[in-house]
Image (cartoon, rainbow, N blue to C red):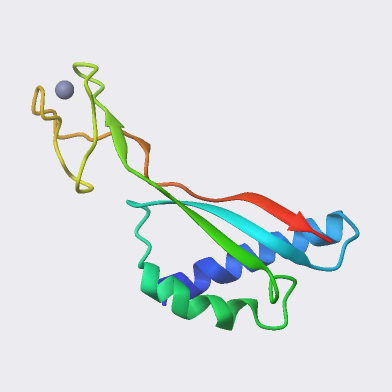
Length: 113
Ligand SMILES: [Zn+2]
């Protein structure tokens, strides 16, 4: 499952950060996840407890910020909000979509203790 490997790589990153800080665990983790990042939310919810078990994230509160998609057309400069990964520019029809947001998958903040 794709989401399990994502959750486990988040655990790896958090573990490194906790070690770097000389701390023991994460109290809270904030994630920025784009709505076009290809994440199945239910699958992530399912994978999360499996991935964080016995890790620094085991007790962490998880806060997910869903980032709405937006795109910028490189041909005509039009900014728009695509509903799919392949939505062409509604202004000029340029099919090469350039996302400016909505595909991120990143740790925004860790509260460590
Ligand atoms: Zn355009």
